[in-house]
Length: 258
Length: 234
Image: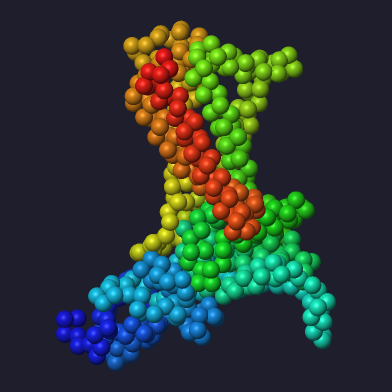
């Protein structure tokens, strides 16, 4: 690091401790890497790209991590960065920029840790448990055909706003990663609130919550202790009150003998 | 894992159902604790008022209820609630443990859930001691104070003799601190679990109610032992 020559005085030299794991059955370990001359305008993933190019040049195995749109809207990327899901800012890992760090920082990068998110390789986890929760009930059944007339089903403004806010969930899994119990209640709460606030979501409302929560528990996620760590980590700022709605819907389903 | 077939999912078997059990039993504990606090504060009204109150608790509802009937109804409900609350807590605790078997090397999030669990265990241990102290055995702890017969004859004498000892007051204050922390999160958490906090405003209110309940209980329960320790109540 002492030998580093920076092309810009604002650039940074960093020490990275990154989780390396060859495959699902490998034990895995944290390995230390040095990167130099990192621009503050780079995104966190671009910084990892730089490191991977170095590793490629040396003939070493590059670090596997997930990313897709790199615009903060797809939910594909997600890393535990020095103990914060998606790093210290309220955004996705791809939209986190290196200006959030200081020259000389040591950054620990780990995958989402939850037994329901098994590690595939290095920082890549398998989040298909989320897909199975959605398959269990996170949908509405509609007849195919021409689109219904837009004003046929009026939605009060407040409900529409809340449904929209909940629909912002990108399914990145940061809520699970940050939760002390590795619970996916914020993810489910967002979906249940999104559909439950709209008229189209009513017919399946009570069966939906039971199916989704049962699948969630079956996948091995933990229970909710209402700490709110999920909401703090959520890059979309989904509030904790969607979990209250989820709980209320389950209670209603229970009363109806669900 | 890929093809999961669930035999008819039921709401009653979910983790949220366990949380509902915790919320409802917890709410009953809060109600009981507030009544208990009211009774304790009677110590400030003097020996006759306190002892009469303790006696009335046992004759309440007579002749419809037998002597001590109401007290036993409460005890049975409390025991049932304790079993339910602890069962749900330990089941969820164990689930949470197996939901993340590999821990993070670095983690920066609130650990209030951990406090709830160990705090709950601390309160449970305290309750065992508390029952031995004032209900089941009633041992003579203050050797310079009244004898066993005097303690058994008057609850007031028993309480005052105990809290003339500084270390006994300390034990109770530590237990109160644990209870206060437990209530500050627990009362909010119960409201969230029952579905009363579906807006940011309602959530802020629920947190306020949690903190207020905790403060009320800590202050209300701390007054009698401190008054006795500092000689305001003799």
